[in-house]
Length: 263
Image 1 (cartoon, one colour):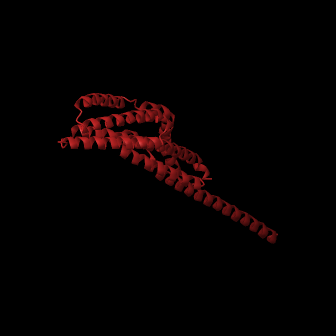
Image 2: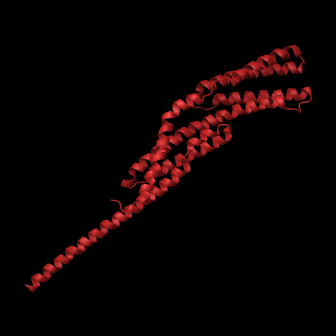
Image 3: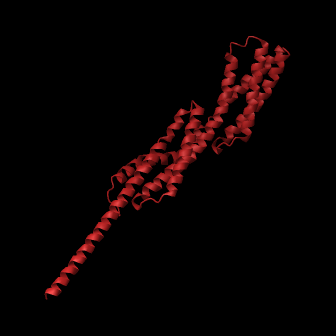
């Protein structure tokens, strides 16, 4: 009997030890997995914070160069973060966050790519406008030679930009404006060429008529339909979805960062 009791006790102890080991293993796995969830949430937070609020780039429309640089960075960051997310295995508890982050960065990359192209499209147009303004306000043009030189420079700028428009990849949303601008600027270039010849020959009567034509075409350029309305319509759904994700993702990250055990 004593031997049987001893054996029974050993079995009980063995079972208890096994239970404890299993419990410790489960707890260890839960703790480890919880740390993985926290780590994933922190990495996601770092990525999200780097791109969050990209829509504010639209507010910088007065400076197309700065806007282009801003969207270029957002595009590159979004692409990099998508690659990092695709290379990771998200813990099961973080799968929803993974899905939302991928969707968010896909939207930001898509829109930033188009916005970068739009900004690049606008930069050349703004330069043409500034060059035209400078001709009208340049007090240093004291001689006919200075005036002729300024208009030749203007024509060179217009011709160069028309060539850029021929090869520039622009989003479909501004294809109509792109074609119209190219046509108008081509006509402006022709008028500038005629005006330069009139200046060189001192043909004052021709200059008056040409100035009227040039002013008319410049008015047409200024009156061109802004692509803003079309842009807002085309991208509205994506922007709305990005806004929704920007509201939900921080809460998801906060919850996952507080996870201690996960199974």
